[in-house]
Amino acid sequence: MSGTLENDLENDIIFGIYAPGTRITEDSVMERFGVKRHAVRSVFAHLESLGLLVHRPNRGVEVVEFTPDEVDALYDVRIVLETAAAARTRLPVSPEITRRLEGIANRHAEAVEREDFRSVYWLNQEFHELQFSCCDNPRLAGLIGTHARMAQPIRVVKYDDRAHMENVIAQHRAIIAAMQGTSQDAYVAATREHLPASADAYRLLYARRFNSVRAMR
Image 1 (cartoon, rainbow, N blue to C red):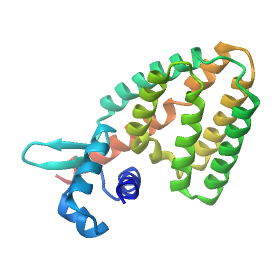
Image 2 (image 1 turned 120 degrees about the vertical axis):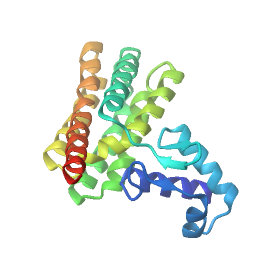
Image 3 (image 1 turned 90 degrees about the vertical axis):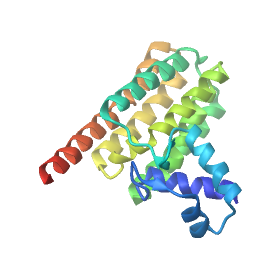
Image 4 (image 1 turned 180 degrees about the vertical axis):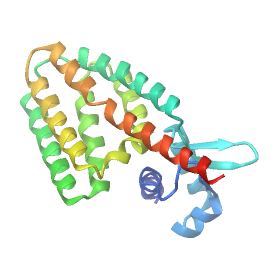
């Protein structure tokens, strides 16, 4: 049950059912999902370790809310980690890895077409977990996974932008093509190219949101 609860709460946070800054209580989760308190606490601790929740003294557990500067800092770290992993990946990757990446990329593109954004999210996770598993440093791959999960609430702000998502699909194809080749520089470039657009969109939405709040005061 805790695995299902973890996925359900993660999805709810990623897709804004629990908005950034929202307080989440153990009792409300227990009532909604029909689970025990120890299961809720375990899931809260795990989601906090992923950077999706934060425990604030005298306030309880809240959904993380990034400022634009925090988003920029997170993406700076992601660029360092992911390009380092690309530079440490032995090329070309095996035909089996290519086949699996292409299968995930195809399912991801189909989910975009259906506007099945939860599948888009999980398939994107699966694609990049497999991509970076090819790096010869498993600790680096683990750090990439952690920071990618932290960034998902930022990435989904563009999921309903078809032009952006078509670009993401093309970038997935470019990553696969680079991993089939022998140019480390080309693979590093394809990996880096995949990162910045969501952060830029989040900064724009954040500015609009808080300018609107100020205007209402």
